[in-house]
View (cartoon, rainbow, N blue to C red):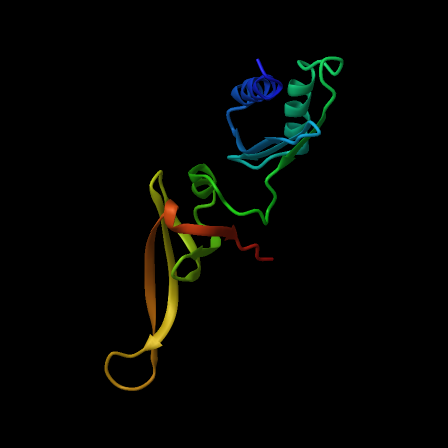
Length: 154
């Protein structure tokens, strides 16, 4: 079993014990720096990161292979990558970039195939002068999303 397989097995075991957490990114550099990025259905606490880190570290032998380990949460400004992240952010405002456009809208729905965004826009009236407020809705498949970021408002 390679070092990466050992680490991945330990990480998978740690996440099985914490079903509200899920893996966003996992890598091991040539210098054996292990980087783990997590997210959770209800966020990720410092204690979650500590617990996962300890679970991985206690089952690896530094005499066999020296390494450094970093376990972190995805962060508020990190792009959304997985359907599970989109699902937990329903009702929040997103900035979504596709190949055709950039949309700032509320995430209304999310499933395993894609998302639905809703927003209001001011457009010219069909008849007469002036503008009217129109409800807009866009259904976007995950493969069409280049980047999606939660817009934080205070």
